[in-house]
Image (cartoon, rainbow, N blue to C red; front, side):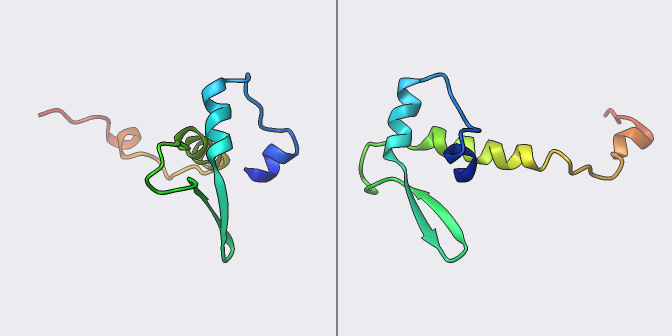
Length: 80
């Protein structure tokens, strides 16, 4: 995600709240992983939209994953 942002592949329409949240994010390296943190634990600064964007990007990257056929394709829905 960070590489996509730095290379200009992630853009947004200049939303003021998202700009504010991006300004609040601190990226902390932990071994081979990067964690997003707020500057202080009890601070009112939010980073939720940035975290949501990172998660959404990760899920979108898994779009090629196709599970086995669904049980509903085999037998249809059951009702009680």
